[in-house]
Image (cartoon, rainbow, N blue to C red; front, side, top):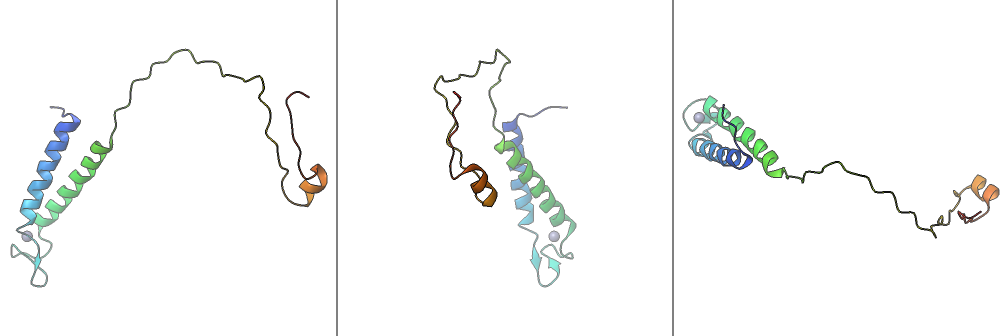
Length: 113
Ligand SMILES: [Zn+2]
């Protein structure tokens, strides 16, 4: 079994879709419930081509949406940088009766206490 690259598969899928479109041009609903080929709508040929077209459109969308990411190798994890003057931001207590009565309207926390 031969494996295809993404580009080769995309080319193959586009050819299959184009072939299905070519076949479907001769088939189509005409005069009531009949296909252009004279059989009842949908004729097996049209149904197969529509399924094949949808199959390859879905696969083509997956292949074309795929982005190659760079290879990341495991290595030392850098230590997080802690700034000497890092402080907590002002914290507002939750609004409501409990927050306002228990904590006051606004408090500021600092790491140096
Ligand atoms: Zn037909």
